[in-house]
Image (tube, rainbow, N blue to C red; front, side, top):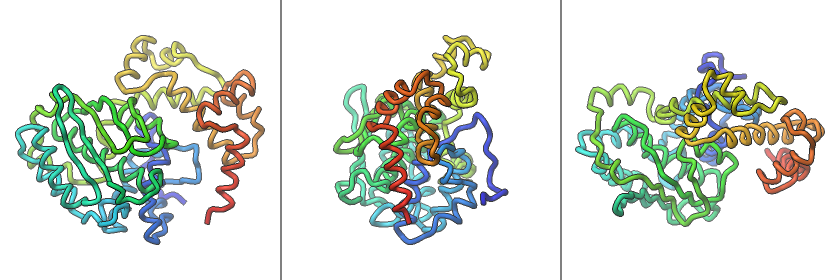
Length: 352
């Protein structure tokens, strides 16, 4: 049962896909730990695949996993990242004259505590690139959940800390990830950038080089407050500016099977359609993408967890006929709804 003392979810607040949680737990499970007590303390129920995880609970689980493993890298890497590393990373960056110098210090520190990764920051005219490569040290399975989350975590760590030091969200122009497109790919637009690509040799995160000239706006006193609740706190930063995405998602989900238009959703938010379109664009998303992601997540959950007829699922999701739903589902997953259900049932039968 969920822990009643865990933070209560709040509608309209930032959430993450369950895929980020299963990736975080991969190292814990590999080392023989039972994740159930930690999930209960954080108030997270992974059995409900249709539910997203409030970032406050995700941040709590983040810290609980580190405490259980005595490893700030979640047991994902060949060598542990000793507790306290995050604090020393921040202190290494403190006092740098520019963000570029702060990141250079951070990279030098991470090369010591994370020898599994090769990390570099390069500038080429108006563009800068953050490069991350495990060089095969994380194993031969490129798409293993542990490897995927290790890259997700490290990029989020560097990006989040850099954003905190300059006091603003830093826009990533594009990110290329060295693994296949994950099931929770829609969240990449919320956490990183909408311009994400996959199956590349190494991770490459591109940003405008002039951002590296930004001055740091945080001092020793600010760092003391920031470290309270860290490093899990890093997962909650710079997401409030994306709250409109979650508000739209909630409205669309609650209205089903009614298929709301952008104008109708804008009216419920007391915004003009043009303003809503602009706000979503600023948050790295679009009305169409949110609508598709909402329907897809519900369809996956219904097919995996229920025996409801596909025609009923299609109707509940607002599709005029099953054939339209069928085409949409194949475009999401590459397989038919029937095959998806069969594969999900098989996975449940073989799971320990």
